[in-house]
Amino acid sequence: MAREGGIGVRAAAGGIGIGLAVGWNIASLGAIATRLSSAYGVGLATIGLFTTVQFVMHMVMQVPGGRAADRWGARTSSLVGLSLIALGNAIALVGAYPGLGFGGRAIVGLGTGFGFVGGSDYIRARGGSPLVQGLYGGSSVLSPGIALALVPGLANWTGFRAPYLSGLVVVALCGAVLVLAPAAPRTVRHAAERLDFGFVRDRRLHRLAVVHSVSFGFSVVVGNWVVTLLEHHGQPKGAAAAAGSLTLLLSFFTRVAGGPLLRRSDAHRFVAASLVLGGAGCALLALPLPLPALVAAAGLVGLAAGLPFAMVFTGSALARPDAPGAAIGFVNSFASLTIVAGTPLVGLTFSLPGDGRIGFLVVAALAVLAAPATPRVAVH
Image (cartoon, rainbow, N blue to C red; front, side, top):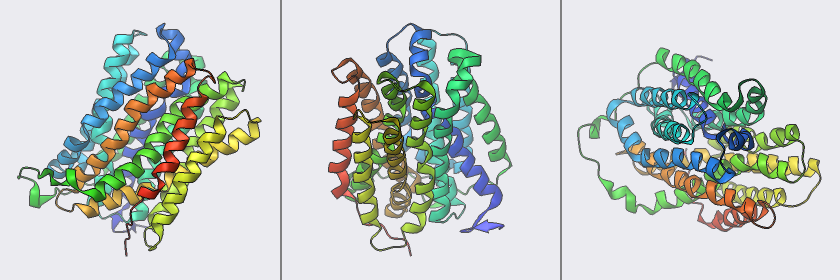
């Protein structure tokens, strides 16, 4: 098929490539958190702060990154993002020094901030349907799921450098595809105007931000610590890594499914149910269950986390057609804040009774409580 939803094959490949490159750099450190702790000579909470620093910068760049996509064109802003991701990984490769780790992840965060919003806006600007938007969202969780499964094995060969080396390779490949893709038009109407920040008070965006925070945001927090949780409670490293990868990998399928779902008038009910089921999966991971049950719980978290994505990003752009990239960035900044705060907080619960289980139970409760906030978003 040459085109899907008005978007050409090269454009679709370029946009999906952005999601793959950004996604890999979201969870690759969590795959070998214990090994990194040993290599850097710091505690697990400090390794969690590497991710925190990345997502602080990611969060700060959401609205500027969206505005850059509106003004420069989303392909250009995304290429800037991929270049920054590559630079940050290159800096961290130099040696196992905490200063380099923090500096490298900060630059990676600048890049993912540009890239994640730019990728979604690129799909929109090239005429992609909600299905293609779902494929983009799926790519951004497919690659971190693969990273959680593969980076531990790569670390046996390259040590602490495994997430950084693999990140560079993925960015190089996906960047090459994006260079060959067509450019995206700017949002001409507002390309030279100052941004109206009235969307900051838009309640539609607030509700979408809550949904995105407890689906995507929590899935990243859980993905960063689930392998460590299972290892600390007696599961073999290989089995823990495989189970942990499901919390992100399976989101690919439900992110794709979430696009066509928007054509239903009751789509919000399915999304709300997914938040409840995701919370239930997190709660099950915190229980002393046999390995098959834990694997099923990890799979439930992954499947549940993906369904809201198309609603959140399509709904944000529809709510603010005057600045769709900035609106997407605004909503995504709340998920980034959730990751910034949640990753080290869950890491700290490994020093409390239950060795991490309390953190997973709190995440579970918040996901369930957020379900009633799900808004109606329909695409006909």
